Image (cartoon, rainbow, N blue to C red):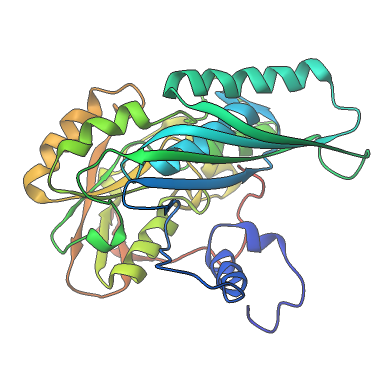
Length: 331
């Protein structure tokens, strides 16, 4: 971590540049074997594990709640690497005084996603802390599964001339939470939080499928930057091609936010070969959660380690990781 940060700031949880620096500083203390900068890790050739913590506020929001979000978050981290989620562990930190009926509602939401994804809860832990020591409820989940894809999907597989596909309009989940916190009425806007295994598994038969990443903290912009820096390639998207959500755009316009860096919980960026791009798009559009998918850009062997966007007015805009926190506690 840079010396000027002598204490953790809220920006260290943004999913952007400060999070990257914090993560690197933590990892320096450990002996790592074949560490990959991905959202899940391989246990062996066929098994993978993903872990995540959830501190979202408000705990319930249009389209979901912390229980649904917690299971979707960790199982989706497996799904984007071609791994079928099979098992789940869950840890709860509950603040004294939390309403029992509300807690059980969140647990039912979590259990419903487990049923949809055929994921079994195999272990867990519960802690209760005094009033004021937490904000009602924090959840940590760990998902474990078996690889179904022919190859291990990941950034290392991305090639120049790959096509970029986005499965949903960027930043919908973040826009929903922003509307909730600032009391902006958007009755038709709901979080895109959803389990994605059933939508993504049909793509795994495609030989040209190279990488997928769900665009959660830091949004689409951060994923593009991470892919560019890790692969050494150039990533271009076109603003006019991005899937649109008018309500999310309106919320961002009102609050001065940029959808590209807001979290989506059902939004995935995909890198696929040109020969399989149209078939990939066709299969995605058969799914309810990814029916708005569109081809949005391409990978180039130029402008190495850079990402940029062609704007609707004909210019180009450099895409970089957010330096601080745009909207805290979105997941």
